[in-house]
Length: 102
Image (cartoon, rainbow, N blue to C red):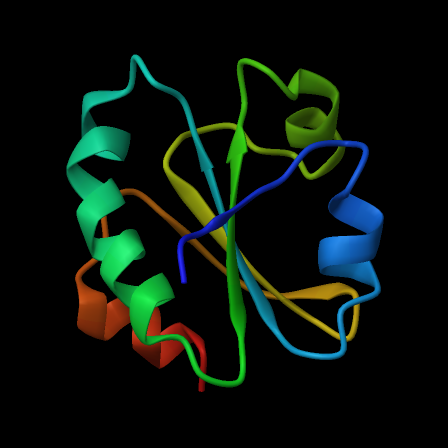
């Protein structure tokens, strides 16, 4: 499965009301580290079982990013039961991302 494109319109239903954990990547197209990290996230999304992966383009969704206090990108936030349950900032290895999910 490919990551879900998240916007302020679908964030509530796809993330906050999700019955399964959701890993959300905050990124921007001009961000070189974000582009470098994207294949890792795509691989995790393709293998996802028991969780979803979503992406928020901070340039297109600045209010959403600001509401979650995103200061640097890439930032990953794991949501469980509609609340943030973990956060990483910067490019991460696949192993580090998967560890966040545990």
